[in-house]
Image (cartoon, rainbow, N blue to C red; front, top):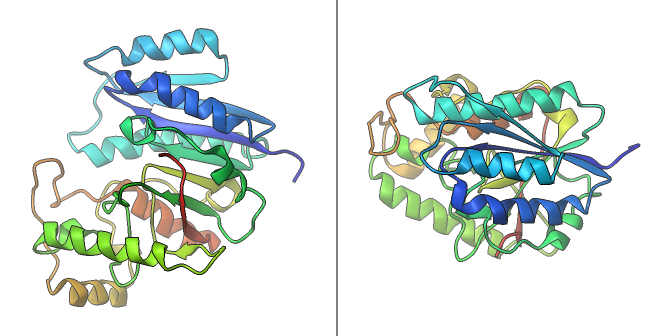
Length: 272
């Protein structure tokens, strides 16, 4: 590897109250790399998000952001996929310069105090291609998580609240009981922040649609048995489960299928 450069990526909408701290955390993490960029896709907001982006760009020329002129879909996960794919395209176009990229949420999740040494200790390890981290007080992002035997989305089974709690407790115990210096294998995980080895993610893209074609039937049967439910397609308050799934799931599964990517979770807490 000739360089240790990283592209920090994110989608922002109504993130104004958090951006100062998020950018400060990015600056602290950027010290781990030889060079970096911050690439952001902006959707029209009802707060000062755009003003914050412009002000920060004046202070830091490493920031490059795109202003999306219109809402492209009525489905939230579709819009997030579009935003993340725009950032991903920038990474792909500069793949020789950025051996790593980070996709992160730009809201309160990453507005805590960051521990750069947690990320640093994994940078030169070869046992991961996508690495996300634990969070306190609990691992929260069950929406993006697929981990055997819970291979699909908890929202697509009956009693989704109970299934959320069950899967949350399951992954918390897995991370707690990991042997020293080990990472947790999974099918998909994000938890608000993940670092990727660019070379393994050139043949994949984010997709907020329901992609049953990417999930082996045996995995679906396993999840149905674990959830004691057939598949459910239901509209919820924040997501329409008739059409939507978390955009990270298709992204990670495609990378595993196409590039044999190792998707892992570290038990360490990066933001606390």
